[in-house]
Length: 258
Ligand code: NAD
Image 1 (cartoon, protein in one colour):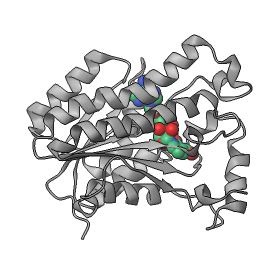
Image 2 (cartoon, rainbow, N blue to C red; image 1 turned 90 degrees about the vertical axis):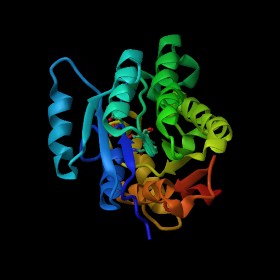
Image 3 (tube, rainbow, N blue to C red; image 1 turned 120 degrees about the horizontal axis):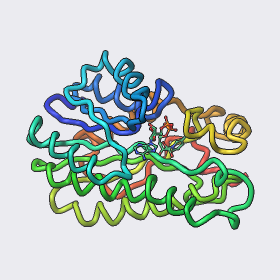
Image 4 (cartoon, protein in one colour; image 1 turned 135 degrees about the horizontal axis):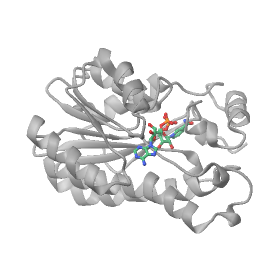
């Protein structure tokens, strides 16, 4: 039985009801986990209000700002987690960002700031958040991140984000090797294309989704709930023997050569 009762789960990356992190948070809640939710703060507090309203039914016991580019916010986040929860069992890293200009056209034209920003937010944040979480995973734990096929194969327009995802997948392996002796498992889910705020910035995302619907063995793409179910599995004891892996939740698209 998939049971996360008594587990404290910190979920990053909810922006709205299309977010993959929202699908994951719902499944973790359903499995009995106690949730802490972070949001990306903005000057007018709009995101805070929007995300707070959305997650209210899941009754998170923590709701905190976390811009992963801000070390102080990350420190405050884990200090609060330590004070309120004592320990943490699950970290969901479900966020990414690249400038819209860098998600279309020629990869060779990527600017230095564009490259740095994409890798900082989308990749280094996993390392940084894992530092904070692992220190509080006193009874072992599970860290799950989200990746995409564009980190392994060339996907038109995915560009710098593909490089960020390749680095992310390798970070998963280094973290898994290092944290394994503390019974902390680190895995990634490679999701098929889903319409979200982040994916709408990728040039031709709708064509990508239609292509998957035509070619994938299941003749469709996947839902946030399907990704959420796999995340819940990776956070539970049902996957206790797995670490350092990239699991494809993509209706089978990855196996196809043509
Ligand atoms: P989304 O827009 O709903 O989520 C992206 C999140 O990143 C947002 O909540 C945003 O607030 C957050 N974020 C951006 N910059 C941040 C920062 N500096 N600090 C903290 N948070 C920040 O889109 P999504 O598609 O649900 O993306 C979630 C993850 O899933 C990403 O890693 C994405 O690459 C990955 N993914 C998405 C797809 C897809 O097709 N949608 C496919 C495979 C993988």
